Amino acid sequence: MPPPFLFAPAQPRSHPAQDYPRPVAGQVTARRITEIVESMAPFLGTLIDPEFERVRADPEAADFMFGNPQEVASRQYVDTLKRWLEPKDKNWFAYSLSNRPAQEAAAAGLSRELGIEFAPDDIVLTRGAHGALAAGLTVALDPGDEVIYISPPWFFYDAMIRAAGGVPVKVRVRPGDFDLDLDAIAAAITPRTRMLLLNTPHNPTGRIFPSATLARLAELLETASQENQRPIYILSDEAYSRILYEGSEMQTPATHYPRTFLVHTYSKTALAPGQRVGFLALPPGIPGREELRLAFMAAGAATGNMGPDALMVYALPEIEEMLIDLPHLQRKRDRVVDALRELGYEVHIPEGTFYLLPKSPIPDDVAFAHQLLAHKVAVLPGQACDMPGYFRLCLTATDEMIDRALPAFARVMEEAAAAMKASLSSSRPGI
Image (cartoon, rainbow, N blue to C red; front, side, top):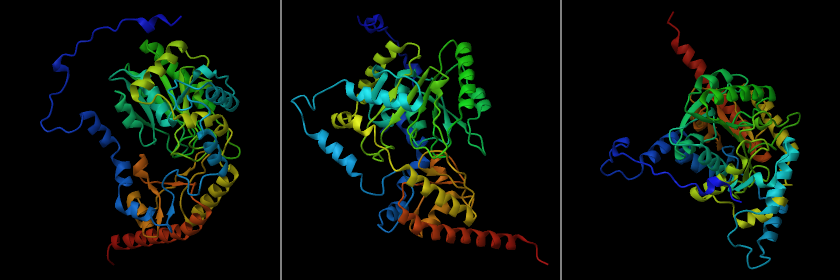
């Protein structure tokens, strides 16, 4: 029998006019969209900068900006999609609420990975991690609810929280080791806090938040939930959970905190971010499991994110078994880290993800990125991901790109050192 809440009558809601700001004459878009655009301004400014566009379009450029493939997709991936594109019956491309083989494959893979037994019915298929994040926010938030998100963030966290009617509250990782700042999280919690959004392994730092930290976080949120008399959820973006370097082990907050929505995607493991398929998983101990299952189905319809395309769903069990060449990725990581350190750059060693986050040799990371553009090297300025004074490198770049880029990093470091020396000389008082 369907749960009783499914047939509960909707309560009438009053919308007094005084609760809303007056419309502005000539206003083209919703105020909410204006706020969203403003929240994305640092990233959008880099994305549409004509100099970045010009260099990245150059076939001789070394492009380290984003997690895009820089080589043709694997034969295995392409053949899998071709095989599942051929219809087997008249319903092959019909409407479908879900797909049992895909749910079973995702649940089995995630269970093996995390050591938690996930049920197929608790796998919500989505259009990549982006769709899963949107679903998690939509299901949990009422208008005005606060979402604490960990910074530096993925580019769109702030915007997605606003789009779901929430209020974004930024808390930075600890400087130095990039671990969660539990004291800052505790200070940010209010009676309106509904969710904590984190990303582990963390883009852009590559940090895997330790199990001990996540256990203390769980205690903190459980206490706050009881004091607020309203549960606080964790939305755990685990897009890079399988992009781990030797000696690293994935840790999930779901091990310690049952009210966790886990977000996963195959865009990273197959290095095919344009083919959107992923899922949101509910851990076995989450309270209100049956209600949440139905809520996610409704949220998919309400947000236009009902599910991925049929082709990707059929291919999912095979894509589940695919993984990029991690030893090669690690060799590139080690090579670039060693080379940059030898040149005088300050850079830590990431535990996972595709990224390095070195410090810019000059305070203005945007100016530094533009200096590299002059040498046909494109990096992401730190300001684009809320890390001013740093820059991000993506290791999906080819070995040939690295060969071309390292001399440019050397020249720009020399230019920065010469400029610093000249500035110090000019600032000395005359003798």
